[in-house]
Image (cartoon, rainbow, N blue to C red; front, side, top):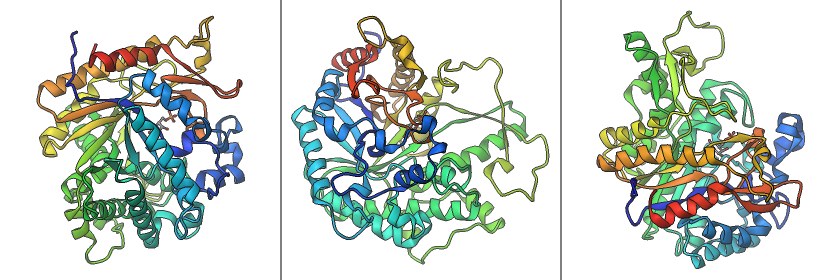
Length: 461
Ligand code: BGP
């Protein structure tokens, strides 16, 4: 065994409600922005497949949890659908939703799989979006009530909580680059949405700590290292700006309780500072995370801008840097993203150096593959050696970080079973378990799922 991990290392995978539950309309669930967006603009979704067709975890969770056990899970992250729990985002709790999530939690625990619950994974209830979504202060209050309801009902059994998954993604998708609803480009609103998300996170952390439950609460961030094209000061500065916008904007307030000064100065200069109440910054400062989840897929390759930015175009962070395609970079041939395994080590070392070596884990890492059916063998199994190699190569770097003292506690793959992924729908498959869409959503474990079972059993490879 060359790469041995600690005995209590968390092995598992991550998922989200909208992406795997299905049953988007039944049992009292209200609509969220994805249900609504699909209903009104289905052409935006790959092959016209919407969130009403996700992997049917709602019906099949017992079978799925059994499979998780077979795939060596000792922990599993899922999210609660806010609009299932509160069909209107607030008000009456939907008791059927409480029963469903209780059953899932109990079933996981029976199988010795620790439930990790994330509260928000891109799925704003439609009723609240109509009132402005994260642009609105009222939504922050509604979110804290929703979070407190979850702590109250499930907190006796759930000891790992997360306030948000990748909170920057709804900011980018919804308010800058058009891949989440409401798909507008407005930097001022983007900043307000980002600020309210961070504030909501801090207030949920406060509510959790006030409830005196004995678990931990954190946030899950997609941390994407930004590498400059060269050591030329202009390239280095450009990469620093990308880091500031896309990593430190959420990482600093979540872990240090403070927004980066350079970012605040820039927002002030451009007249983009968000509206806030007097005590908000204090709330953020006093309620930092206990635990940090890190999602890592690919790095950012950055160079200095070659042309002066068009100051009349809508403001986007790319006013300060350009992307570039590094010659010779290794690509995932099946999904078009770069694969740079050492990136995971660089992030972890940075968290150790600049963020007090806070307890952390890899909460998502994974390899998307288009048309994965082509790798099914005659017995029906997907032979995904590429995914096994991908995990091994990343785990080697995590192991290195562990040896150098990083407080990293686990590795969760994205994702357990093939699932629906927003506008990409079922285009890219990521699971340890395949889902046969054409055959009643039948599940079958992939070669990587069997490998993962060995990995977790041996605590290494
Ligand atoms: C992450 C999200 C997931 C999932 C994944 C894969 O950023 O947290 O929700 O969608 O990306 O994305 P895609 O299917 O677009 O390749």
